Amino acid sequence: MKKLIIHSVPVVIGFIWLMTVHLTFNPVILKGPDFLKFYVILVLGFYASFFMLNSLKETISGTTFYFAGFIFLLGIIKLIRGVILGKPVGFLVVILIAEGIVTLVFISGYVNEKIK
Image (tube, rainbow, N blue to C red; front, top):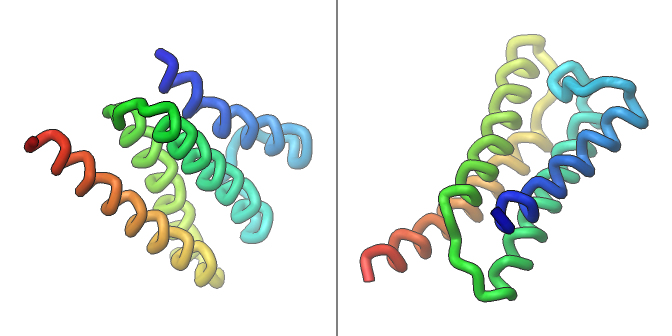
């Protein structure tokens, strides 16, 4: 339960920012720079909460991977929408690649921990 609450904080902060600045709860309809601000809030907040849990010596659970997967899925959805509309998506691609690499590093550590 503690992990769920800790990982939910960046999501809540991101959606509060989204509601106060853009008056919407749908991040997919945002234009490029505004979506990137929202997405960076989510990604940096998630990894800050992840490192906070690591510093508290908590184990990585399925909840962590679900949050990482949903954030990555949101980026992929926006990437597909941007490509279909013919918009530039370079920064989003770079963020998604970096997020994928970091997630793979954590997954490999998690799998190695489970095997032992």
